[in-house]
Every structure is written in C-alpha cells, then in structure tokens.
Image (cartoon, rainbow, N blue to C red):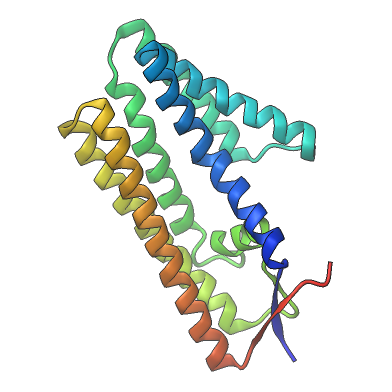
Length: 210
C-alpha cells in the first residue's frame, strides 16, 4: 500500500528544532542580547556573527551549507556594514522584508513545476518520504507551495508596516510574534490539508524504522 514516511517523533523534533533555530532563533537571540548588552551596533554584529557561526557548524557537521543561508548571511553582513557606517537602521530592518519577499517568490515560482519547493523542504527539513510518487500528494505540494508563497508575502507586508511605524525594540517583539503566528498558521493549514488528501487517496503514514 502506498504510504508516507516520517522519522520517529524524537528525531523529527530534533530536526525541526535545529532548522528553526539556525534560520531564525539564534540570529534573533544574538541580536536582542547584543543590543541589550552593548547597544544597537553590538546587536547587529552579534546577529551577523551568529549567522556565520551557524554556517561554519553546518559546514563542519554536514559538509555543505544551504544556498539560502549563505545568501542570507552575505546580505545581512552587507546591510550591517552599511547601517554601522551610515547610522540608517531601516536598511538593516529591510533585510527581514526582503527575505520574506524572496521566499514568497521562490515558493510561487516552483509551485507548478515537477518538484515544488514545499516537497523539497518537506523531505529536507522534516524527512517526509513517499513510498511511490503519488499524483494526489504532488498536487498537494503544488497547492501548498502557493499557500506558503501567500504566507511569506503576508509576512513581508506585516513587517513593512511594523518597520515604518515602530521603534526597534517593539519592532523585534511584534515582528517575531507576527512571523511565528503566520508560520504556525501555515503549518496548521498544511497539516490539515495533507491529512485530508491522505484520507481521500487512501494513504497511510508510517514512522521510519531507523
């Protein structure tokens, strides 16, 4: 019988925690702690340092670094240098908006292709595998890619409004809440949607033996 396969719960939790931590949690924590201890510029430098440290750990541990993480680190570094040199903080904050716009474009571009971005991320981030390639699941990944394009586009709009209307401390708090809220909502919709597809297609879910 055709089925979908996931890593065992503890392994899945570790994988998700690491993915979220390296992409957002650690750089943001470094920014907040650095700014609290040494001011704005110290926070910016701490965030950049944390991002490059994550890349180094990834390279040592896995032998490779995701392309998006590399691009993000380069853009973040350049923006930080410009902010420190000019004192114009909004250039740094623009990084958050640009990142979400880029993700929205990437999800939308691959939505109708043979391998939607959501399918690749499901395999890389949570280890989701298909016993056989199923048309119904493929259509879900196509539609889900459009869903996540919308999630990141809406996040970009929210961050833009917050960026122009709030000081840095409030922006960081409200931006984090808005981003996490939209991502959790997107995950919830995706899980319910996939569950509905599996029921209609008669697919089962199994945990990997290893």
